Length: 403
Image (cartoon, rainbow, N blue to C red; front, side, top):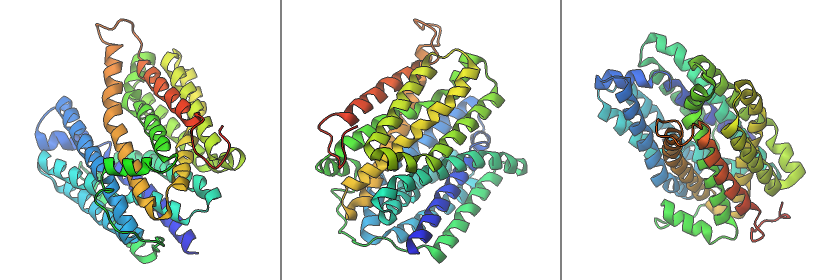
């Protein structure tokens, strides 16, 4: 029963957190213009600084948070993270300067622990055969939140630029209260906190000493960098390649998010049951390769939208890789592993948008050797091919036959 309560809480936490994040998307440019007195172009630059500050802190301190949850338990780390998240949204709602907004994002990134601890929870409460499915539920909740959040944020923005931030704070506070009442502790074997393992480099070196885990993490990083190119350039690519307006771009993103959510919720468990974790990851990565190649060369907007269905199937790869990593890591290091994966995701959030937009400019600007708006997706395809080859290499250590 405790495991079921934890599962429900974790899924709701990820859902509400992603709704809260999505709430602020529509109004953030207006808030930045308001506090800086600048125009939209300058707001975009400051928006990039806010995103980079959060991601940099998440990268640096993800393993620290994970190690803390391995030492003191999932419950206190999760509840403290929700307190910080509530305060962060309130500060952003009341901020009168860009520096206060940046400080809020730094603190939020430094303490970002809900997704890390949620994944550690899943590792704690899941049997090996259900672990991949439960990681898929986290991904589905994330996708649902990012669909619902911007829509709700757009509605709240009618009441002012601060209203969505107050709404996000209210959601975080409600979730904090819910967790304080029902959240069970699932950590069974606490271990001593070690600063040598509580940083990205130390955590990765430690993970690399476990047979097969360093390879899994490298594949995970390559896939994350490749796939974060989609949100970075999708709007620019759609406008340049097909002449899509903002409404069409928004609908296409909602369609993509809905397909991804459905795959995470409905397909991960059956795929792992039928093919095993290793082959499921391979199938997902191969779908990602095919999708990136297709989006790189497609010239018909309707065909691109139809192919989103195939592209969504790549969503089975990440939960399968998470399940493999959780199986290879010791029971008392699940938080550290998920914190490290959070750091690697943050690396992708920093590297991928810069790389993808630079490649887009190089192949669409006036000095471009050839006009190819889909070039960033072709770069992603190369990274994904490398991920597939590394994943299926004979030296990979796993408890099942190589795919």
